[in-house]
Image (cartoon, rainbow, N blue to C red; front, side, top):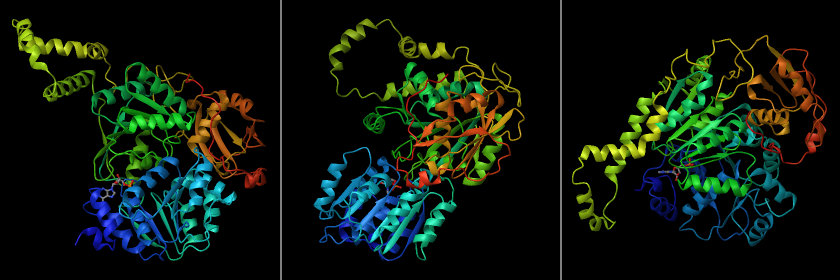
Length: 584
Ligand code: AMP
């Protein structure tokens, strides 16, 4: 018996997965499919992307749907447009032999009228992002009364993105559902709260260890002086010529700056950030997916939901503040049984972060030296020579030219030809790396003694390390701001907001402590008044933002006003910066 059939799937679905080349079910599929096929059991699947979770819920859904009843019977809610389209595409493949089942993807950034028209025609499964779904519910364009199955995919990401109220709303508006299936990579208390409030005796399964990283990923880290981050990144790219990768930065400004510098040096790279229109974003993603773009650089915010197969490397240009973000980042590689490499560029003061990451994802990190200029040249050289040897000469009309060529090169040795080819291809490389520094040395230009602090600088020159880890540093002032996670911010977008508004660099910041309604920011004393001046009194979502020096430590004063504004606020929760500022 086919292994998928043994899980209880019908012939058409087994045929569809066979057509896709799936031979054996993945762990989450084995654990989820038989349970979900019952149709009445609530389910929690702790599984990351890349584990085959879409098929784990998609196949049972397709089997449970009654094709003769043309109204929404299943609702899949996921955090982003990309993921929404990805799930829809997977379902399309799975329903290849069940064409009577109709699906519709509804997401922001596309014509709502078209989506309404399609919904009116009658669909069985709706795949939705929260914002657009609520919009459709409010317009009474979607009837959820007969929805039997609700799937929350990447629940932790949705909560991270501030969709908590939307999820509550959706679950409250699907009162006739027979089961709720929740998938999440991690299980923070907020996700636990959803299961408590809306699920009954859920069957919980975990794939791998909770919060654990994928075993197919090799985690490597490189310790370099802060001033050499960019150079180290360049070396890592050059040392891995076949790399198809995503680089993560903490801020949009870094993403922009690094991509511009690399593009100027001839790398195929584009930045993905909040300033791009949906059309531009689709264009970049299209190029990346079709491998016309070797590298994508993105902030965590912009990279939400990106789901691309075959990523060989994830590079952390900087380690994220939030350790869980590391799992999301590294999970972009090493998917579907393939191996992947996650490279992190860090500073010596971040070593303890590596230790806590190791504990958190229960995997060992390998400290690796940044390759020397010579190593890079050698690697590139042989990569090129391998390509030369693999070149397909079977189709060209090369024979025509051979006699003339043989004559022309009659007195030239093989060594000389190779040398000349190498010179043509590698001259710039050899020159660039001729006097390259050893980036692993701690005493080279621009390095700092551990606690030494300077102001300003950038990736080219000296740069003060971000010091969220230097708690208790006396050079900091604490600021209070009446914005928090309820305003749709999470750390990365909040950081981006305050930096964009104040035109300050992230190096001035220390620890950021975000709560629901307020946040506290550690900031270099010298920069505090600039930030207050830029932000205090600004309007955000029809409210006046208040920022001032906090008088206590990281204690939580009484919540500031504005709760009622926020309770009735629209759904545009994710901060979209007004303009792109240049990296200074
Ligand atoms: P997902 O975790 O749903 O994003 O799936 C990750 C990738 O694994 C997708 O490209 C799927 O097509 C693929 N996949 C899912 N299940 C299987 C399977 N049983 N065998 C092989 N590939 C699979």
